Image 1 (spheres, helix red, strand yellow):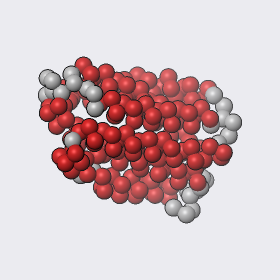
Image 2: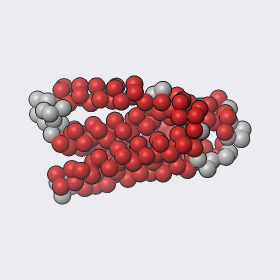
Image 3: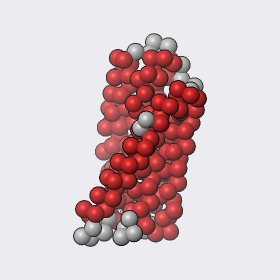
Image 4: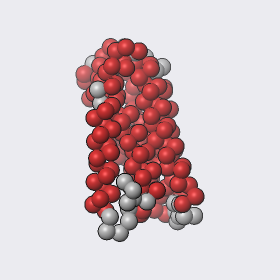
Length: 192
C-alpha cells in the first residue's frame, strides 16, 4: 500500500469501512425483516432489495451527469461523503422501522445514498489511480476489501444474536460514518 498515493489509500480504507458494514448486515437482513417487521417475509426481503436497486439505478445517471458537469473535485467529494452519510442515517432509521412500508421507504432512501456515493467514489479513484499502477491499485483494493469482508461477514450474526438488531444497525451506521470520514482526510489534495 506504500506505493499508492494518499487519495487512493483513503478511498480504499473508506470503501473497506463501508463494504464491511454492508457485509455485516447483508447475510441477516432477511432474518431481521421476518423476525422484527410486521408482515415481514422472504418475499418482502426480495422486494426491498429490488426497491434499493431500482432507485439506485434511476438516480445513478443523473448524479453521474451532475458530477461530470462540475469542474474540480469538491462536488465529487461532496457526493461521496453525503451518500455515505445518507446511508448511515438510513441504518439508524432501521432501528425505528416497524412495518413493511417503513422498510420499502428506507430501501429507497438507501438507493439514493448509494447513487450519490458510487459514481463519486469511482470518479475519484479513476482520476487518482496513477499511471501504470492501475493493476496494483485495484489489486490492493480487492485484497483490503476481501480481508475486511471476511473479518466482518460473520460478525453481524453474533452482534444481532447477542445485542439485538438495534445495536447491529448502530454498529453498521458507525462503520459507514467512519468510511465517510476517510475521504475528508485528503480534502486539501482535491482540485477546485
